[in-house]
Length: 356
Image (cartoon, rainbow, N blue to C red; front, side, top):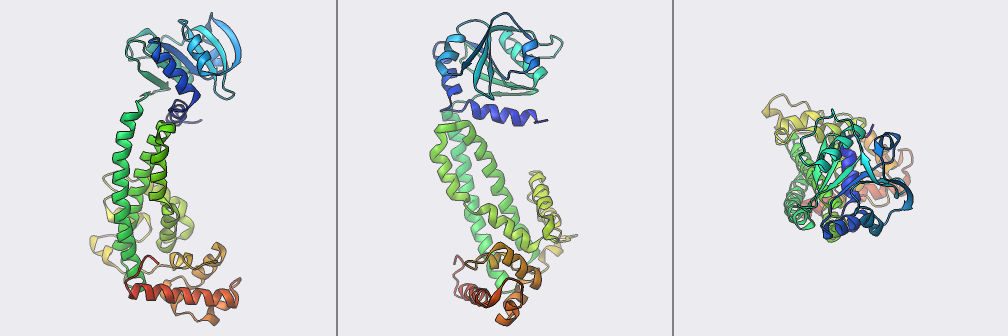
């Protein structure tokens, strides 16, 4: 079963600025009237409806506004976006607890808790839109308030992205010098996870902003472009078992805010066996996956073959063209390309040019 929180996220997207439903809700607000709207047309919803009248018409903002002039609830089928019932009285189970005071909001909360469907309640006096789903409850915020918080989050994302670039460049230099440590890797992963979390928070803001967040979405897209693939490459270079990538991703994502600052915890999730702080300074060797990803025209299957065979960047760099040619699917052209590109990467590091 889909969680109430996930259904609530879908409902927030449905009422975002620029959507037909949001336009209808704003029309209702401008007329200073209230409304009770159920987004779901299930047998359970039908069973708790009394009175009113049946409809089967396409949803439009104007129709919603006119139907909400009446006192009863409006039932919308969100799968087909058709209005199914109007001016109905809802009779959810009266024993379901509610912490609301107004009759409309009490009915909305009980209906949502009984059906686990999104139920919208508009207050005529306060001009506020409430969404209920199961035990979840959210007030729909004005775009200005959301934009203010989203812009602060984007500024934070920008700072973290700059810091990630710095620690990633440091890791690249140390890898080429064969002197990277567990601490260096854990620091990079920590920054990457923080960026993922901030991006996730901003994504929620953008979903609620709808058409009002288009420019901000472009800015975020530019800031995080390639970050997910870079994160996967670093993991494949260092996690104890490359097949555990999904598990490592999940465990990093589930780390609490107080543990994400703990490099020891991050290192152990990667499978790097850190038992005390001193272990963080242990040198560690990458498999060369990230370095190989920079070789032009080299397929992912070829990268896996080469990295699995040598299993360390120093051994990969020491390999001759003949050694590379012997690998399945590589051949003379690719072998030469790999050798030349790895040499170019090493020269770039020596020259202090890391962002090649």
